[in-house]
Length: 93
Image (cartoon, rainbow, N blue to C red; front, top):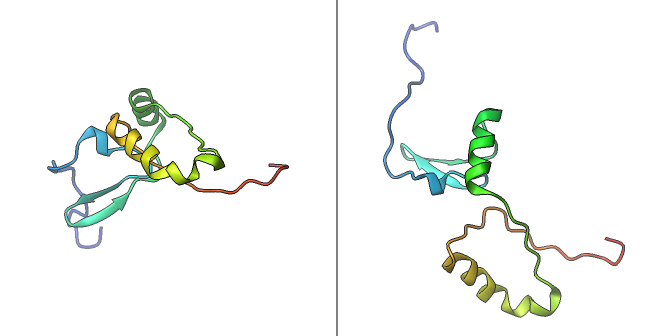
């Protein structure tokens, strides 16, 4: 504001598709890598979640060796994994 110069402005960027815009994705804009961590407002959240949807999947311990094949099958069927977490649960959990 002191210099009376524009700090940011809206611009078109190439190379970003709607399928790239989901929570947890990393996109590159003007040579900067940005990680999408949250939505800007509730309207945007509602629109993107209606398009994308969410699914929770859990692989049981006896299939642990097949985890790579399971992930390949998920990608081959057109799904995207945005948050992958490996955990070991105790009996109370």
